[in-house]
Image: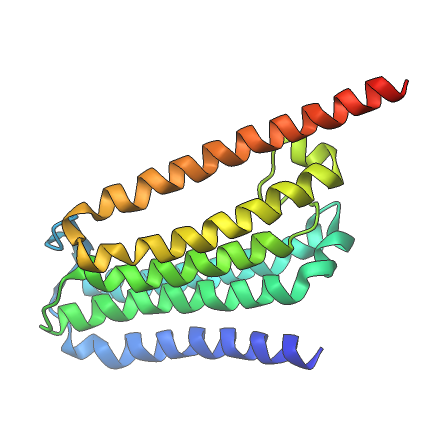
Length: 220
């Protein structure tokens, strides 16, 4: 209970920090702020500073509320309590990731120049590592994890798929760090392994489910 309170406090502190940053930075920002960067790290999208500074903080609040309500509305919410600690840790990391992206944009618009893609890599790596951490502990539910017909139909298939998925996502997080060394290939480094993990998870869960079906047929 104490740990949950501390994580909630950290999340609210991060949200408060981002709003304070928005108000403090307002007078230092250009009238039109860069809000989007292409794969080469060049700014190619701009918004008036009033929107640019406060849009992401508002989005973060909405996401915080959505992530807060998920364990309360899932039909299998009792199962979520079985990995609630890991879920709360992931929520905290996710909000930290969003704040990190926001601060990068603030520094860029203050005139600090850096390779935006390279700076994104450690953030994505951290996020996906804790995604794998969460997945590996997730119990069967309808809103969190690798939700497929075969995983939702069987606790055994769910547990096997998520144990494998958790390992793959943690490995993927480490692979993403190659983007720091090879920023020109970051799109390939990001999407190719991710697609392979998703395809492998679908196929693995399906064949595990079929194995169980075959066993049940033989028993009959």
